[in-house]
Length: 558
Image (cartoon, rainbow, N blue to C red; front, side):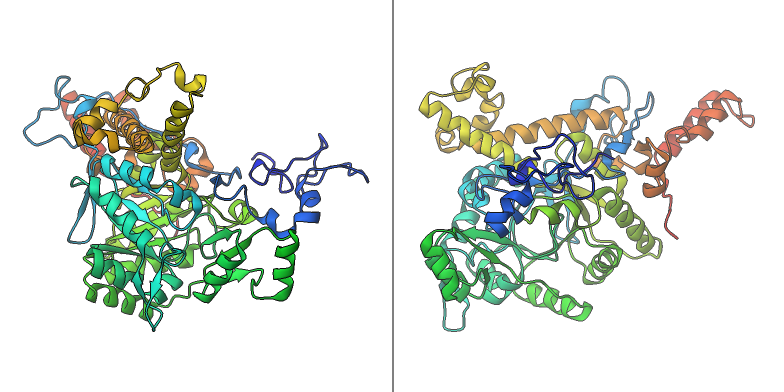
């Protein structure tokens, strides 16, 4: 493991002065009276609670960088020189038909009324953070064009300056939510969906009722947590009036904007921003089932659940209760997380890391399946950004895992594309981009694909951030096709845990995936020793192919 530095990180714009740092505290080994900074202790001396969060708020996304003992990089993907699984029944598996462009990357999720996606990824919850709000057009159009699901996160209605409530405190008008849904739907073309996530405040405001009645959404998501933090959603506001408004709507706002001391601090300029917090959720089995039933009675066809990097008890509750309630998708998000705003040290030090949590999730799902119970479709989240990570997650959780939830990785292309548009307008295109051309048509390799999808006239309305997300999604899709073809899996259901090997014995112990010097060893020795039992070489190869087509489910937690 690399040493962690809890007293300095670029996320909080802090740094140690000394070359030598105490590994536990992160303090400089030689702290000088008179030092001008800029470690976290130094900066917190005068900016206090601001140092809890990465910054500047609204302009950054941040991801935990703690180096865990075992992670997805400790798994490698198997490649085979024979066989082809997952091809259509009428297609022969030979060198002419089993080519990587023939790989089908489509997936689907849902108990009965399923949703198809062009590739097995979808966005993390893009909610009330400023990053999500100001980049929404890019994110929503990009996801719709890419054929993937877009999760509209918590608190969107609650922070809308134009929100209108009735005398009972229920939503009658939420223009920003309307805008978000309508933009995605405008470019939706059969794959994926937009779903809305709810927390405590969303439930109290009647978000589910509003999006069901006004927009007829088919899916709603309940939220227990995320990989970045174990407390509710947060944003910052730099207006006293805005802070008071959010407090009146029922949010926790700190420091208390109604307190004379807070108002005095804001007036004299030392207090520059307030934090708006959601409440902690409290769950129990019966109320969970009751809420699922209430939402179904509102007309929702699908109910999904997002849970975070909690321990094994909460993981078991999510899987077991989700199975009994017949939820349509369970997203399991591990640490370290990434977000538009979370407490930095919590992001670094809280929760179960992704690989450990996902390995346990597979084990728990298998236990239910072995008892003949149907397991909800599963999605894994927590630090994924590339096609190899997607493949590993699908294989580790096979056959239960249907998709991967991506947070920052699907946001970055939207922001980059948006910025390219601005750089083009200002005539300040950086060399990293200008080396490929000076027009969108030259710069974006997928430009003509998107134009063909939306039409020549509509192309002028497509934001470049959306084109960026489409381009990135295509990179994931084609890269995944190549990974799958190498593992001789020509459709997603063909992927099994056999396609992985552990690079370390510790990874094998955690995941149940065989250590690479043990994976397929028995089959290899059979070939070397001519253990055919009277059968031909062709029979031996046939047995091996049959073995490859099954999923070795190795339980490691008894």
